[in-house]
Image (cartoon, rainbow, N blue to C red):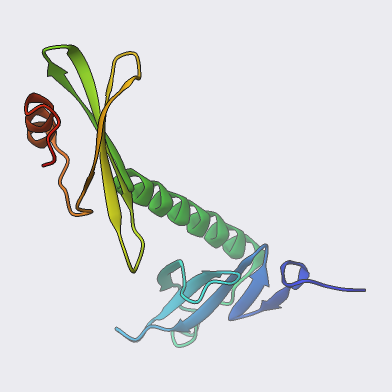
Length: 158
C-alpha cells in the first residue's frame, strides 16, 4: 500500500498531523506558557501561531485532542483564506470616478514579481470598453484623487 503525506496521521500529545495540517505545541519564547503552531503540508513556516492552554499541573501544556485539532485546522484555514483575500485586494484595486464622458472605473493591477515587479493602470467606461492602459510603478497609489487626475489629464502616464 502506497501512502502519500495527506494520508499520514500522527496523534501525539504535542504533535498532530492530519487533514493537510500539522499542529505542534511548543514552548512560548515570550513567556513561561505554551503556544501551538499550525503549519500546512509543504509550507516552511506556520500559517498561524497562538497561545496554548496549560495542563492541570500548571507546568506542562494540555495535550492536543481531536476536537482541539479540528478547531485549530478550521481557524488556520480561515486565517489563510483571509490573508489571501487581503493580498488579492491589495494587488487588484479599482475605483470609480466621474468624468466628462460619464462614469469611469480605474483599475490598478500589480504583478509582485521578486525580480521585476510591475503594475498596469487601466480605465474602462460604463460599457466595460477599455479607454486607456499604461504601465506604472508598482508603488503607484490608487485613490480617488490620483484616479480623477489621470482621467482628467487625458490618461497621460502619471
